[in-house]
Length: 360
Image (tube, rainbow, N blue to C red):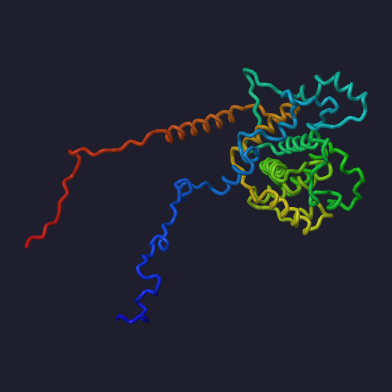
């Protein structure tokens, strides 16, 4: 037992030195309550809050970009005296004489004469609602929002864009692209016809058009690029491509768009979709409050530019259906707000319980 070579005896020079247990068994740091799993935010909420706090495509209270582009610094709608409206579209005049003629007869425009107002005996309502928007007028409003994006961009600075959206590098048709393609601003009707062609051929809904505008403004915010004459077609095409796959149950394949735009390849469509998703940071979520905000802002834009939504006279049968629907919703809300009553049983109605006893 006294052998110096025994393993139980400490080596010379370390005898009598106590080992500090705190070095071996160091206590683990406590996790603060703020970082516990119960109080952690969802990853999408943390990313949005850190990176894009004022992004209108994520926050319902942030003002939409197209509505700010369509208004002057004093809050008034920009004057469109160099345009006249034909079938709800803004058409540019190149002649100064026509512009003066339009200004003199602006109050006698066909839209003002065709606009219907309700009275005590007659009520007019439109079928466009936030859940079922009118397709034709929604496309016109979205085209008008894109028109204001291009027209009122910051022209003093160099256009910020990416090669994937450049129409010179990735043309949509086999026709030769003019040298000044980046200086020719499209008219409202040209934008509308491009969008209408895609929506009618792919049989997309009006809700998809609103989602398209949400993705477009989200791309401009995340990627910090401008929508300009040199890239607006491919940006709009990428937004429609993504919105149709996210919103519609029966999504349109990329090869189907190649049947609509016959001169584009599937590889180009795949690259456009992949780059669009990466620039959005794969954030394709659109809250219902954001969707409603974009819908009502588009309605405000339509009213400011005299784009009239179709209205119908309220009939007796339709009034009865609306009244029945409203009554059912009111009853449902009353039932939901009614507090639950706990039912008690009185002693008189209670039946005595018989228990089985084993006698030995």
